[in-house]
Image (cartoon, rainbow, N blue to C red):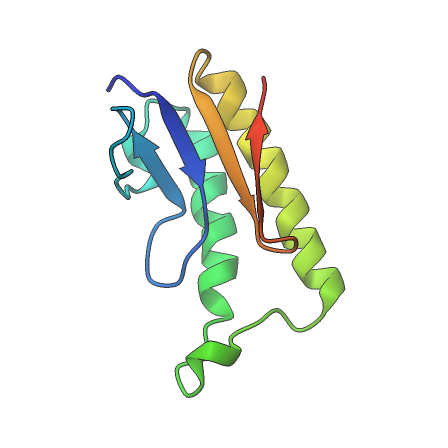
Length: 110
């Protein structure tokens, strides 16, 4: 898999990994285990995303949220660390991390 960038972006009902192999193309959505990375990192990304999926409120989707700001900040910090690990395992691939606590994207440099 030849990649230009990988976006780490949690969304309800999807995987958090959005690789793009062609400039200007829309990134696809894949399970972490489909990337050429360690099983350990793929498992950690999967567990991290599971935390996000767990806050989804079927009865009131627009109000799905973390229980408090501290929980949201801790989730975001784990996502940033996972993105840094991903950058180390995919040298030469730009990693873009979407921080849910700030609603901003950050480019990760290994």
